[in-house]
Image (cartoon, rainbow, N blue to C red; front, side):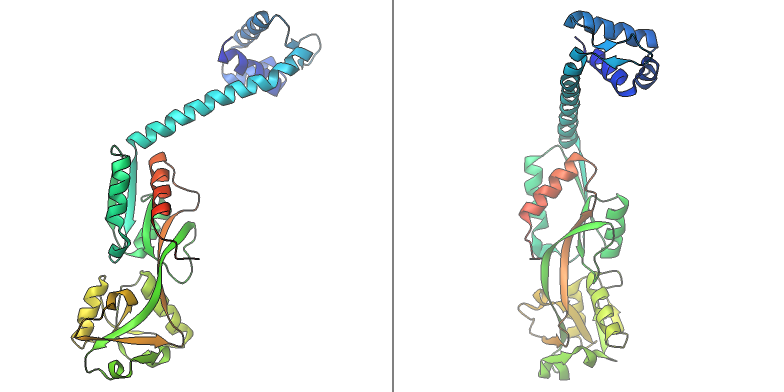
Length: 297
């Protein structure tokens, strides 16, 4: 008994015709008929009733159908398992990250995955959140750590891994540094120092200011939050930063709590909602989701 015999037999069952079955399996009709007759001889019973205008199953043929389907399904599963293993052993994972996600321990996470799967090629790209979102959505990257904007990006699944307040930072001697607190509306007209457009924190700042009826006055911008704190220390404005950047605050910087409303910054692991297309990327995503904290609960 051969797998192709079972495949030809099921093709006739599904199409109800030797001619249609031959077209489906791309074999001449006499070849399909010959293989099914060989199968019937091996089993010792006819599987198909050819006496009428339509081909019908015999009682024995009806009993054989589920076993034939199971046999072919098992072969497909075995091929899929081999493909998965081969893809994982020889695969490639393309990751992205924003500049300020060092505390998450991403290098350690990648190193641990590499120890388990040493043949998988891993590439790491650093960019702004907007670029990373586009790259994950377009398939250039398999996953990325992004700054989450106010509204989750369309087409992506996300898991929040950091959720913390956003605070202001000003130079020692700045009036807001003495007060220690400022309502969001109090930032109107203030020279602000911020991450660039396209970052999650910038999006949240702009959305909150828009809801309060004004546009933020961005005096300086940079992609490194620690550089923003240094600019604030030089008296160039109020920097809007994740609270962790000022924990503890440098001696020449004073933290300012932003209230009414309190702003929050979130980092998230992002991947295509449909899931990665290759086995290595799927394995890495599972590894990352197990290793990274879940701050969304």
